[in-house]
Structure formats: C-alpha cells, structure tokens
Length: 127
Image (cartoon, rainbow, N blue to C red; front, side, top):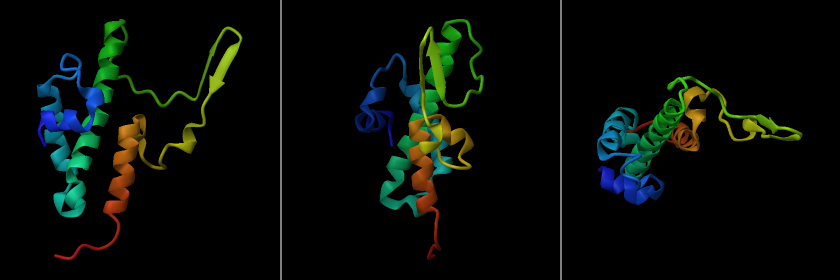
C-alpha cells in the first residue's frame, strides 16, 4: 500500500500538510509488522490502512495538544462526560470500546482494526 492508495481509501486524511506522505509511509511500514498477509489475505490493505489511520489520529492529537502548550503524548482515555456551566453530556464509552483492547480503544480506527484482527486471528491456519 502506498500513501496515495491510503488517501484514496481514507479521504479524511487527504490534507498533505496535516498528514504528509512521509508520516503516512512511516505508519504503513509499522503496520506491515502487525498485519500478517497470510491471515488477512484480501483484507491486508484494510488492516494496514486501519493501523495507519489509528496512529495518524494519535499523532494529530499530540500535535494539536503541543500547539496549545500542552504535553504531547499524554495518555488520556475516551471522554465519558463533559460539562460547561449548567450543561453537561456523558457518553457510554463501554458501549463501543472492546474489552482488553487498551491502546486500540483510543480511536475508532483502532477499534475497527482490533475487531477484524480478533476475527481473522481466530481458528487454525492450514499451511
């Protein structure tokens, strides 16, 4: 998979300033270590793209935090409630989070990747 193919499949990452090709390529390279094409078969590119998207979102989050003087890389879980003055909202984060997913629960791309990985990794493999 190339950065161009990744952008075609995930157009939300089309901004080359926020998501330069070098950054996409770096995460695609990492993804090749996590997605076994023997198991993923025709879904290999999907697995590569989901891992890459997950890491790009986290990188963008860290960059946005640094831009406002925060500490990039600080670990935060999903927001479950928020209030401003007398208005508040809360979300059932457990409804969409996967159990024992840890780091992968930090983005919707990570949740999708791990969901597929668990299905694809189940069962035997004929060699």
